Amino acid sequence: METTKFDIADYLDSNEMIAEYLNTVLEEGNSNDLIEAIGHIAKSIGMTKIAEQTGMSRTSLYKALSEDSKPQFETVMKVLKAVGGQINVKPISV
Image (cartoon, rainbow, N blue to C red; front, side, top):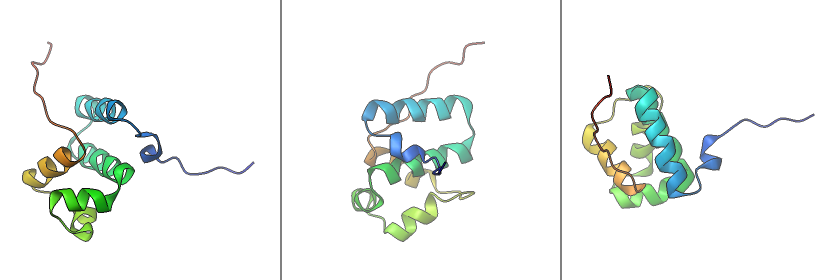
């Protein structure tokens, strides 16, 4: 039996799926997980399209969203806006 590598970007095919994915990562992950998730979303939409919308080069976008990168908050916000996302804050239930 032949297997293929799982790629979450293949399943991020609607705004609802993207939002659910981001919210899950925000609730359960850390900052590195969030950057990786945004990279998956950008890949699913198309890096060229996201680069055009953010005013960044594709190379800079790949570098900013690579594993263990520490992009500036402004970059994260630009990419989130380009993928149709935003950050909302809600109180933590204790």
